[in-house]
Length: 447
Image (tube, rainbow, N blue to C red; front, side, top):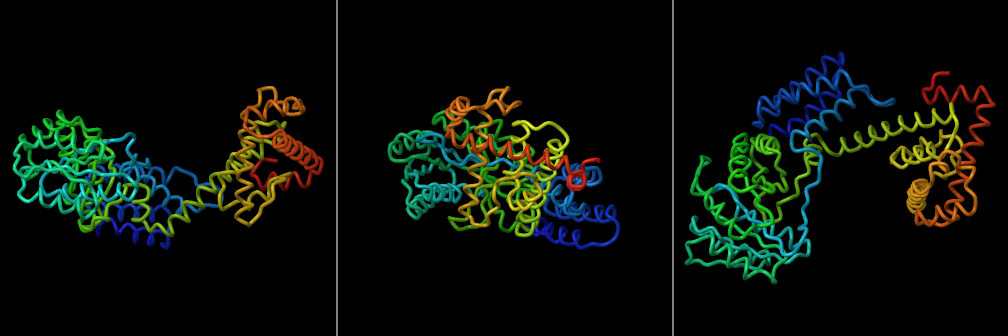
């Protein structure tokens, strides 16, 4: 996708550009517009996206330690992920067995090859797969699917002399039940992208007969924006559970197809990235956009920005602790933020009274994270009174809290000691005016 791949160069140019931030933003947005429009993304969608990016770029304030240009790259990443379907993970494994998938789509979209790719994908996951050849319209469809089934090691059902696809689908389902965890029915297509009533009626008839668990629409990426109307029309005929976009390896219209499908609200479950059987991958919008923007560099940048956001929240929590009365609710907030900081755990060194070590050894690090998780469960098992007045937690209460949180009384005692250490240290800080003023400056608290 030459158009979309130029997004990576646009990011590089933006981060290296000189001049004012506002001019750099305008230039960056123009580059994004060119890349998306050349990839056949709907012009209206492109301008709506541009407007959101510009508004966020000029209004949002990055967390302390983050540059405005880096922050804008994160904004672009988030908005592009929304354009291509959001950040959710598709549900890939069948919720029950046997599970029936019915593939639908126009001729030439790659349904038969996609059926084999799906079979290969699920075989690799340890599931038994069966393929049903219900395409009686295209010559050679039966032989092609039978050969592909042998290639991937899937069970196969077909009736080369039968002209009624509904009967084939029904008998194939009956034959493969007990032999397959997933049954994939390959149906016929028709030439052209117009309103093919015969095709849509056939889809309704087959679906009515076999009652598939999921109907999957297969769309050729070269369709571009036309994918929107196709997805809508098929959905009206047979409610679509998810979509597979094929041939994303060599078309400049791939962005148009992806964004058009996402605009229908349908879930894009897989994308075909080549002709080989193994070239089918789950579609995750954030990962897809990350690759377009240069995932190696972007991953590190996003990780750092996310950590800075959590650091800002941690600083706020610590500021409240320095200026007010400490209780277990504040400790809970503090631990939650610490657990999210990831690679920026060095910030813990600035937290007063922190008794946790900061090991570099991986095994010790996992123990520390496990301890924090347990402490959160312990605090969640406390009463309101205990949260506000941790001093009342005696041996009897420790036993009750330990049972409620699935931990030991010793672990509860360790958390209470941590609370006391933090409280004691903050009292000492507040007595030392110079140190207090320094910490307040560090945490951005007005003196």
